[in-house]
Image 1 (cartoon, rainbow, N blue to C red):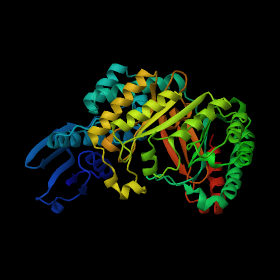
Image 2 (cartoon, helix red, strand yellow):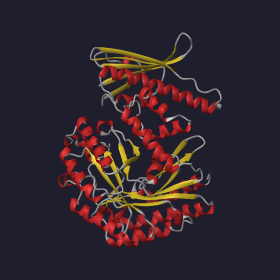
Image 3 (cartoon, rainbow, N blue to C red):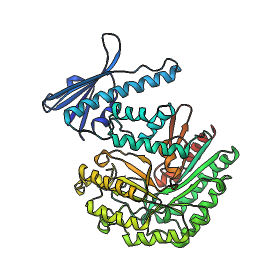
Length: 497
């Protein structure tokens, strides 16, 4: 347990998230009187020195060891407009506070988090902003390692991915968007999952009702998009497990989507066929006929005992069979997801999985580090997790060697809260096989319109670099009962395009 006392500021969220990198149990106080002298503590403060310069500082004591660091808060450029200047000053204060707190905690605990002071899920976006500010790669690397305290390999990874993104999604377009369609049903709930999906076998009767409301939402927005001649770049049908839909249901869904005047010019159409036991040749051919070019088949592991342990109801052999079906229909781009750190998995388990993946050679390979999500089964049963930080690191090293050997390059990444070892999720691709949608949603440089229960729209303002989240209602029944609210939200978003 680490107690953190705030003085001169109320930067509670950043303080808690950063301190959790060093100890999972954190208490935040704003008054010294609440401090228990029997526990480890750190004081984070913001104050002016004798010259009037605003400074951030941190000091603390852990297991009898003491440390203290301070640094001045950077003054924003005087040429900025008042609002932008105020925002920059606030950002600089928070940055200085995080840096001081990080240095003290690192010194007191001996821990060296590989991502430094980065606690957000989109570190590549920070590098993109540096590139847009005309910083060179060498300067960015120095900033990441010396001011943000990233390990060198993570700094290089960010820069390499940012360069890949710039080659494919720049120049940016203000009047362009992407469409995400949510199919929130699954054959079963995986033990690591917290997404708002619904058990197909308990909710099967509601699939058609849901689809009717979803199509209503799509049709209303597509009508406005066509009227305003708004460009749509990519389409992603995700979930849940969208491949639980039958051919007739996919036909109805794509009939609505093809009302989009720019449908034939979409740069990418992806459908998640996440589980090999959920689709047929008939469904795959339907998707191919409607212009789907990219399929995501997500085994997570190729070890049968692990699949059983995480609540999956398919075998590794079914994964191979499904992959063969996808290729037979003629899809040229396939993504496969893997998760590092699943219950009971070892380095030998990963070796087997990679041997099987090597036989298939998908164009994309997305590697997730297991995150312990709040509403998941594993959150309540963490005793099932046997892999420590060192074990995860060794597995990620194996992934890096495998991808290099088989011609994959990292092209997008993101992080999540409560990940094992505080590591990352990385999307790898063979040359020319990168997913534009994945890059766009993680870079937050282009608007995403989310349709369906639990979907989130993210409206991007390139002039201010602001992103506005507009969530749809999560619950399946609530979404269907209150579809008018979803229609109104989309109309409000699109009126400003």
